[in-house]
Amino acid sequence: MTTIAQTIRDRYQEVLPELCQQFGISNRLAAPYISKICLNMGVGRAIQDNQILNIVCDHMSQVAGQRAVVTKARKSVAQFRSREGMKIGCRVTLRRDRKWNFLDRLINIAIPRIRDFRGISPKGFDRQGNFSMGLTEQALFPEVVLERVEHNQGMHITMVIDNSDRERSLALLKALGMPFQNR
Image (cartoon, rainbow, N blue to C red):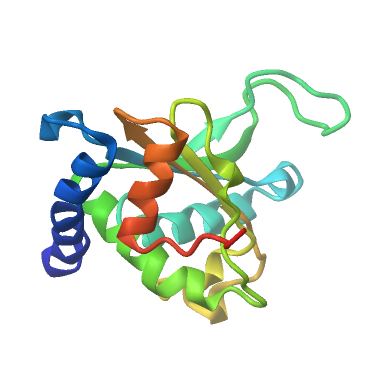
Protein backbone atom coordinates (compact mmCIF):
# COMPACT_ATOMS: atom_id res chain seq x y z
CA MET A 1 0.00 0.00 0.00
CA THR A 2 2.81 2.42 0.74
CA THR A 3 4.45 1.90 -2.67
CA ILE A 4 1.37 3.10 -4.56
CA ALA A 5 0.88 6.06 -2.24
CA GLN A 6 4.58 6.77 -2.42
CA THR A 7 4.58 7.19 -6.21
CA ILE A 8 2.06 10.03 -6.37
CA ARG A 9 3.56 11.62 -3.25
CA ASP A 10 6.96 11.49 -4.94
CA ARG A 11 5.46 13.13 -8.01
CA TYR A 12 4.12 15.91 -5.76
CA GLN A 13 7.60 16.40 -4.26
CA GLU A 14 9.06 16.60 -7.79
CA VAL A 15 6.60 19.24 -9.04
CA LEU A 16 6.64 21.28 -5.84
CA PRO A 17 9.74 23.37 -6.73
CA GLU A 18 8.30 24.08 -10.19
CA LEU A 19 5.00 25.24 -8.69
CA CYS A 20 6.81 27.46 -6.18
CA GLN A 21 8.86 29.03 -8.96
CA GLN A 22 5.83 29.46 -11.25
CA PHE A 23 3.79 31.32 -8.63
CA GLY A 24 6.66 33.12 -6.87
CA ILE A 25 6.37 31.23 -3.59
CA SER A 26 9.55 31.37 -1.52
CA ASN A 27 8.47 29.03 1.29
CA ARG A 28 7.59 25.41 0.42
CA LEU A 29 5.01 25.33 3.22
CA ALA A 30 3.04 28.08 1.45
CA ALA A 31 2.67 25.97 -1.71
CA PRO A 32 -0.68 24.35 -2.63
CA TYR A 33 -1.21 21.04 -0.86
CA ILE A 34 -4.05 18.48 -0.92
CA SER A 35 -4.99 18.23 2.75
CA LYS A 36 -7.87 15.74 2.43
CA ILE A 37 -10.23 14.04 0.00
CA CYS A 38 -13.90 13.70 0.91
CA LEU A 39 -16.08 11.03 -0.73
CA ASN A 40 -19.87 11.15 -0.53
CA MET A 41 -22.69 8.95 -1.82
CA GLY A 42 -26.29 10.02 -1.49
CA VAL A 43 -28.56 6.99 -1.73
CA GLY A 44 -32.13 8.15 -2.27
CA ARG A 45 -33.37 4.60 -2.81
CA ALA A 46 -32.34 3.75 0.76
CA ILE A 47 -35.65 5.21 1.95
CA GLN A 48 -37.55 2.25 0.46
CA ASP A 49 -34.91 -0.45 0.98
CA ASN A 50 -32.33 -0.26 3.78
CA GLN A 51 -30.25 -3.14 2.30
CA ILE A 52 -29.21 -0.92 -0.64
CA LEU A 53 -27.53 1.47 1.80
CA ASN A 54 -25.57 -1.39 3.40
CA ILE A 55 -24.33 -2.62 0.01
CA VAL A 56 -23.34 0.89 -1.13
CA CYS A 57 -21.52 1.54 2.18
CA ASP A 58 -19.58 -1.70 1.71
CA HIS A 59 -18.58 -0.63 -1.81
CA MET A 60 -17.46 2.79 -0.59
CA SER A 61 -15.47 1.20 2.23
CA GLN A 62 -13.68 -1.03 -0.28
CA VAL A 63 -12.91 1.90 -2.60
CA ALA A 64 -11.71 4.20 0.19
CA GLY A 65 -9.78 1.67 2.23
CA GLN A 66 -11.54 2.69 5.45
CA ARG A 67 -15.01 2.27 6.85
CA ALA A 68 -17.75 4.56 5.55
CA VAL A 69 -19.94 6.53 7.94
CA VAL A 70 -23.70 6.45 7.37
CA THR A 71 -25.23 9.93 7.04
CA LYS A 72 -28.71 10.88 8.18
CA ALA A 73 -31.15 13.48 6.87
CA ARG A 74 -30.97 16.81 8.72
CA LYS A 75 -34.43 17.96 7.65
CA SER A 76 -37.67 16.39 6.55
CA VAL A 77 -38.40 16.91 2.84
CA ALA A 78 -41.85 15.86 1.69
CA GLN A 79 -41.00 15.62 -2.04
CA PHE A 80 -38.20 13.14 -1.34
CA ARG A 81 -40.31 11.29 1.27
CA SER A 82 -37.50 11.67 3.77
CA ARG A 83 -37.86 12.38 7.46
CA GLU A 84 -35.36 13.88 9.83
CA GLY A 85 -32.93 11.23 11.06
CA MET A 86 -33.45 8.76 8.19
CA LYS A 87 -30.34 7.07 6.79
CA ILE A 88 -29.81 8.49 3.29
CA GLY A 89 -26.14 8.09 2.36
CA CYS A 90 -22.56 7.51 3.40
CA ARG A 91 -19.30 9.43 3.41
CA VAL A 92 -15.56 9.01 4.01
CA THR A 93 -12.76 11.53 4.63
CA LEU A 94 -9.31 10.39 3.48
CA ARG A 95 -6.06 11.78 4.84
CA ARG A 96 -2.33 10.86 4.75
CA ASP A 97 -1.45 7.61 2.91
CA ARG A 98 -5.05 6.69 2.08
CA LYS A 99 -5.50 10.10 0.42
CA TRP A 100 -2.49 9.61 -1.88
CA ASN A 101 -3.45 5.98 -2.55
CA PHE A 102 -7.01 6.94 -3.56
CA LEU A 103 -5.78 9.84 -5.72
CA ASP A 104 -3.39 7.50 -7.55
CA ARG A 105 -6.17 4.95 -8.23
CA LEU A 106 -8.55 7.72 -9.30
CA ILE A 107 -6.13 9.24 -11.82
CA ASN A 108 -4.56 6.05 -13.17
CA ILE A 109 -7.37 3.47 -12.99
CA ALA A 110 -10.87 4.90 -12.49
CA ILE A 111 -10.84 7.95 -14.77
CA PRO A 112 -9.46 6.05 -17.82
CA ARG A 113 -12.35 3.57 -17.44
CA ILE A 114 -15.01 6.25 -17.99
CA ARG A 115 -16.92 5.71 -21.24
CA ASP A 116 -16.56 8.42 -23.91
CA PHE A 117 -14.13 10.33 -21.71
CA ARG A 118 -13.00 13.68 -23.08
CA GLY A 119 -11.39 15.09 -19.97
CA ILE A 120 -12.54 16.45 -16.64
CA SER A 121 -14.20 19.84 -16.69
CA PRO A 122 -12.06 22.50 -14.99
CA LYS A 123 -15.23 24.23 -13.76
CA GLY A 124 -15.22 22.24 -10.51
CA PHE A 125 -13.02 24.68 -8.59
CA ASP A 126 -14.40 27.02 -5.94
CA ARG A 127 -12.87 30.34 -4.83
CA GLN A 128 -10.56 28.74 -2.29
CA GLY A 129 -9.20 26.33 -4.89
CA ASN A 130 -10.98 23.17 -3.70
CA PHE A 131 -11.91 20.82 -6.54
CA SER A 132 -15.17 18.85 -6.73
CA MET A 133 -16.13 16.23 -9.28
CA GLY A 134 -18.60 13.41 -9.64
CA LEU A 135 -18.43 9.86 -10.92
CA THR A 136 -21.56 8.20 -12.30
CA GLU A 137 -20.80 4.71 -11.01
CA GLN A 138 -18.71 3.13 -8.29
CA ALA A 139 -17.83 0.15 -10.51
CA LEU A 140 -14.97 2.16 -12.10
CA PHE A 141 -12.72 1.11 -9.22
CA PRO A 142 -11.21 -2.39 -9.35
CA GLU A 143 -11.99 -3.08 -5.67
CA VAL A 144 -15.72 -3.27 -6.39
CA VAL A 145 -16.70 -6.78 -7.47
CA LEU A 146 -18.97 -6.42 -10.51
CA GLU A 147 -21.03 -9.50 -9.59
CA ARG A 148 -22.09 -7.80 -6.34
CA VAL A 149 -23.10 -4.52 -8.00
CA GLU A 150 -26.88 -4.56 -8.10
CA HIS A 151 -27.33 -0.79 -8.09
CA ASN A 152 -25.07 1.65 -9.91
CA GLN A 153 -24.45 4.53 -7.59
CA GLY A 154 -22.74 7.84 -8.24
CA MET A 155 -20.00 9.25 -6.05
CA HIS A 156 -19.11 12.85 -5.27
CA ILE A 157 -15.42 13.58 -4.70
CA THR A 158 -14.04 16.79 -3.15
CA MET A 159 -10.32 17.52 -2.91
CA VAL A 160 -9.57 20.13 -0.27
CA ILE A 161 -6.47 22.06 -1.34
CA ASP A 162 -4.80 24.36 1.19
CA ASN A 163 -2.83 27.57 0.39
CA SER A 164 -4.46 27.87 -2.98
CA ASP A 165 -6.86 29.53 -5.39
CA ARG A 166 -8.37 28.27 -8.68
CA GLU A 167 -5.26 28.89 -10.76
CA ARG A 168 -2.81 27.25 -8.34
CA SER A 169 -5.07 24.26 -7.73
CA LEU A 170 -5.49 23.66 -11.46
CA ALA A 171 -1.71 23.79 -11.94
CA LEU A 172 -1.18 21.36 -9.04
CA LEU A 173 -3.69 18.80 -10.27
CA LYS A 174 -2.43 19.03 -13.86
CA ALA A 175 1.11 18.44 -12.60
CA LEU A 176 -0.08 15.37 -10.69
CA GLY A 177 -1.61 13.96 -13.89
CA MET A 178 -5.28 14.83 -13.65
CA PRO A 179 -6.65 14.81 -17.24
CA PHE A 180 -8.49 18.11 -17.67
CA GLN A 181 -10.27 19.20 -20.87
CA ASN A 182 -8.33 21.39 -23.23
CA ARG A 183 -10.16 24.59 -24.02
